[in-house]
Amino acid sequence: MNCKVAFLLAGFGLASTSVYADEPQAIVPEKHLDLMYDHCMDCHNADTQKGKVNLEDLPLEVNSLQHAELWQKVLDVMNSGEMPPENKRQPEKEAKADFLEDLAKTMVLARKKLSDSVGKLPCVVSIDVNIIIPSSHLRA
Image 1 (cartoon, rainbow, N blue to C red):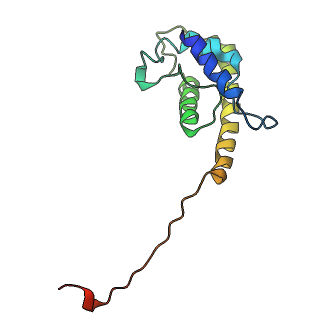
Image 2 (cartoon, rainbow, N blue to C red):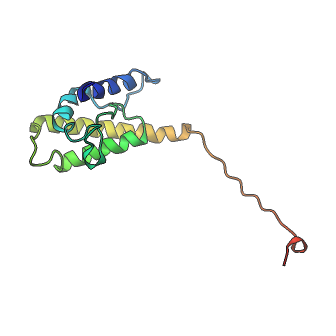
């Protein structure tokens, strides 16, 4: 299966399983798949993973901290001009600006949704127990 198809299927798979259909979802718009494929996947696929970054299996729906961190990294390096590298073909300015705007909006929503879900996660309760042992029971 080629990178573009795998990337697209990962997005569709997660997008279609949403429990909260009425709530806006933190999903990178599919219209940006061509930009990602044309300018990122040669170096950041499952086989190459330059910089230890694999975007091939990254779902379009940002629904975990791990996904959010990687999408934020994509936003940061593309916004700073670090990616794609100068010696590689660059995306059109309008397409890049549109991608960055949509990704920034997606990340704002993802942060809100992920921070809201913290209250829904099972919590761990810690109880301090103090046991008093009489000194007569301690060995010298």
